[in-house]
Image 1 (cartoon, rainbow, N blue to C red):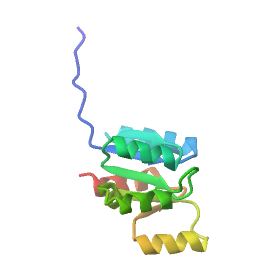
Image 2: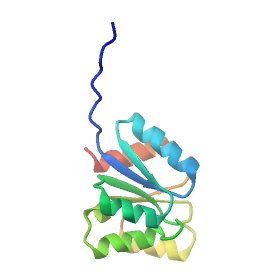
Image 3: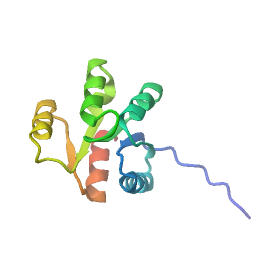
Length: 130
């Protein structure tokens, strides 16, 4: 006898923006395993279009992305008073450049240093999505 298992309601929808496909695949696998629905964008311009057409509970955004950087995307969201600006967590492997250090201190948004652990990713997500 085959039982029809009801699909569990996702805990929230997360947008992951990173041009490194390995990172987006790992984030998707980890976040899906913890009950989150995940969309992927490999550049900031695509992410902006996705954000304009869909609601997200949280966004993990690489600071350095093609077409529109994470910094530019954040400024775009802030200028439009988009609620996702307050639910954006940056990811970066570049904390040595003055530009990135200055930006992160000015915007006062949380960030994860690459490479981050699965636990760090999930803990960051769970702080914003209860």
